[in-house]
Image 1 (tube, rainbow, N blue to C red):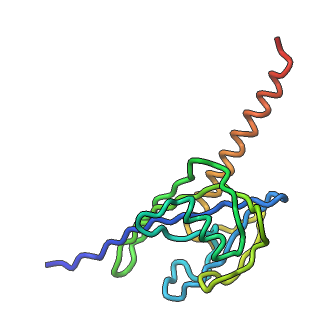
Image 2 (cartoon, one colour):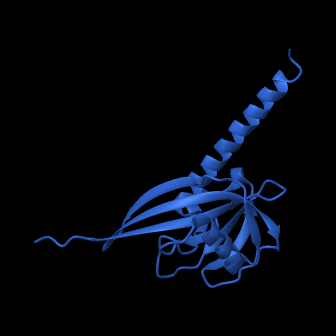
Image 3 (cartoon, helix red, strand yellow):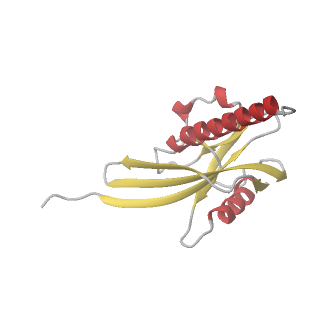
Length: 162
């Protein structure tokens, strides 16, 4: 009988935090036991525990990990679903990303899960050094902002027309 790989499913939640200078906050993971994540950059957040509300968990993780208080600025999350086939495990990650902004505090690494943080212009992010959902979330985020911008321009163009 062939040995089947163990299957693991996790749900993660992250915050796409945009600065006043239109830069996105990224954190560098510190997970030596998980080479797929160790040293890679991602949006800050964490895994959901059974029964967690994603928005509440995200707010809590931001306070614990970065010493900041956030406001989530969208109701529906960006979603990424990825499979990682590792040596002994097939890992399915479902990731929820929410746009937010900081309402109190300055980011500061407050735990052992992250090594560092940085603010980066979306066009300057090297996704080769990021965990996979990061690129998906940032592309969805930028696409939604472009749609909002196009809608605003359309409204302005129609303003004053009778």
